[in-house]
Amino acid sequence: MFKLLLIEDDTTLFNEIKDRLAQWSYDVYGITDFSKVIQEFTDIKPDLVIIDIQLPKFDGFHWCRMIRSHSNIPIIFLSSRDHPTDIVMSMQFGADDYIQKPFHFDVLIAKVQAILRRVYNYNSEKIELKTWCGATVDYEKNTVTTTAGSIELSKNEIFILKLLIEQKNKIVSREQLINSLWDDKRFISDNTLTVNVNRLRKRLDEIGLGSFIETKVGQGYKAIEEATIYD
Image 1 (cartoon, helix red, strand yellow):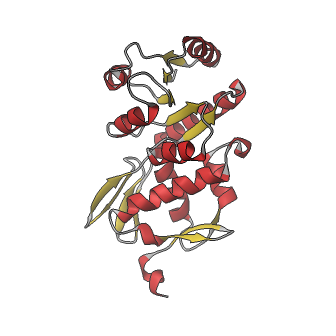
Image 2 (tube, one colour):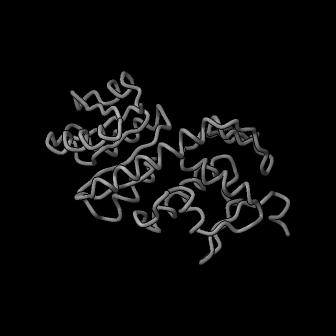
């Protein structure tokens, strides 16, 4: 049974979401003290976090940053705010998905199932180290290491990088990436993929590899080997 942490201060909505997720055998926990979210997160050790943006004490962006400083656990944002900036910010702070209120519960459940299936089935496989552009990519630890240092990527970031490296020097279409990352693309905006790839490239820039992920306008993305950048 997966443990989900639902960080939502609306008691009615919390109970409704909890009841719906319980029907799918998920064990749902809430927050008792919104000034001690990280402490309760650490105690619960959830497999996935669902978090609202508007919360007492500090907003969801703050807690997302704090959780990301401790863990790469998947995070889904819930919000009644529909400004594109909120969606972009949530992705930049490390969220895996964003659902706007009001939402259909089938959409929430589909997203939760897709993320858990991708993250935990994917990580349960026997995964070998990969070498790319002189870097060591560890799919199990979600790390990329070069002589310039090492970075730890989020679940979405390492998954995108894996898909691109597996077809290095070839264009991977946006549609293929979306279908691989999210089971039902009807619930995904095209901008969500763009934000995730840009976030991956920004992280890779920290160790000098950002330029090796190329954008092919109107087509998709390509991971190139170091030797081909000069061709």
